[in-house]
Length: 287
Ligand code: SF4
Ligand code: SF4
Image 1 (tube, protein in one colour):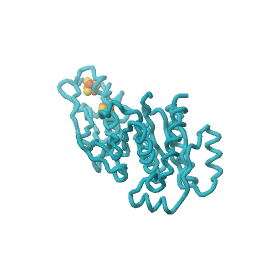
Image 2: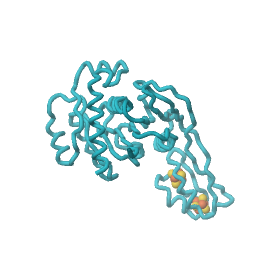
Image 3: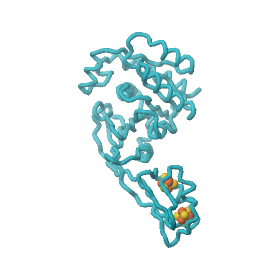
């Protein structure tokens, strides 16, 4: 089987994205080699449910430019190419604003005088190891006060995973920001977890726009469903988003999750639902 990367995302926080991602991983790990990457680097919580044992820990860094004033001719090329406005020409100086820098390296590449040196700046920690059912688990933790989540997500995705991995599951950060786009990049399929409320629908719309722009096939999981919410179902139909799983609003699930249980531990019968879900994903991802 060709390796497949599935991102589990939601425009809105608190929709149950990790509940879905962890149970999908546990179910698939019974049949396949699975890797789970928690890309919600500002508040990773997959480990609370999957209890991995970490065996590697590495520093995540962002490379911030430093200008060599002896070489710089003030041509302004670096300022021009920086899409994040992290550089500015002020008088006879090129100023660097590290808090805005994404560490993309464009300024260094484009400097005709080779006047830019990149200085590694620690922004967090990457940890990896084994979770239950022997599957690979990795997450990143952004240091509090560090503003840039995308570089650490990029580095997390570049960490080595076992070569036999057939399915990678990426738990995306909430929202519809750059860090979500970075998580989705390279994915074969996006599972969009939503809840049947006006807020859930609004934020699903934002996610739908992103996956459409990125040309990533997607499907919807409705969590905490309490009867049909027609605007959501109509939206999915209109935008050709298949509703792939519906999880009811139940006190037993909420209490179990609050205790740190996964959905498939609360209701083991969901394992088959997630296996069937993956079969559908495999078909849709290859279309
Ligand atoms: S591109 Fe290089 S030479 Fe030009 S302003 Fe920037 S640092 Fe200076
Ligand atoms: S590394 Fe990228 S984001 Fe940072 S200053 Fe250079 S061009 Fe801008």
